[in-house]
Image (cartoon, rainbow, N blue to C red; front, top):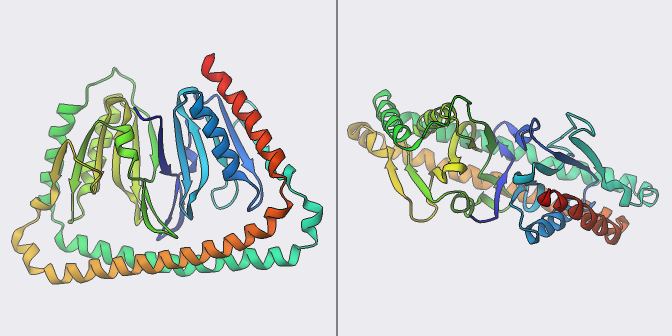
Length: 355
């Protein structure tokens, strides 16, 4: 199994920023969670990247949690086999300790920032923070319109009969694939495999293959994949299997992908290489219904796609402005000492691998 894989834990959505950060790690079984506090440009992502790199060298499994507003930046890292996680606890994904210093604690990377010098730049900082937040509301308006258009297209093709066929197929798959593991219900982690970012619609393409040997590829253009995936999720949990449920950033109440790592099994919408099986849900749509609304569906899909492109352009402008904010802070951060602290932290976490 590949030792690294990637997700988002939050997503830009029609509802605004949608957070699954409460599902970072199971706090009831976690050994340690480090919650980072630091300003923009304060070295949070670099700190986590250095720690993760050292843990990979030590042979640890690493889950990278990337920032949906900047897919090149880390918001967290999880080391599942030893129950340790590090997470950016600043806005918009505010994270606070649940079991302070017994399980989770703060890491104040702001200690490496020359705050006295930054006090002289307070006006510039205020203007920069206000400026980078401004494009988000326009972006979210575009996503709300895109979601409405996409949902309208789905409704034109959806039917009760098609969904019934999909659920019947799901029941057959569950019976064949999910071996019951006793009376304990499985546990669920919540994630996003994709997101709307400054780089456009971004998908962590390598993650399914890192987690799964067998992948069911679900082809759906009539809005019934969620019903199928929800059934499979429930059946897997009832069988005592742990799952990773991945939501659709355009409709975060709906499932887009499902992974069952202990079975090396996945169910994905879209193409991620050669699949183990293809499930063509589109074939369940009524042919006459499909023919009668083909032009309308095509128009709605095009509208949704263009609105998503517009939203991502706003996110790109927000990132450009955020980069300018980070440039204000960068000269006042003692990166040499911060990265030395990262090395020390990595060594302490790596010790857990040998316990």
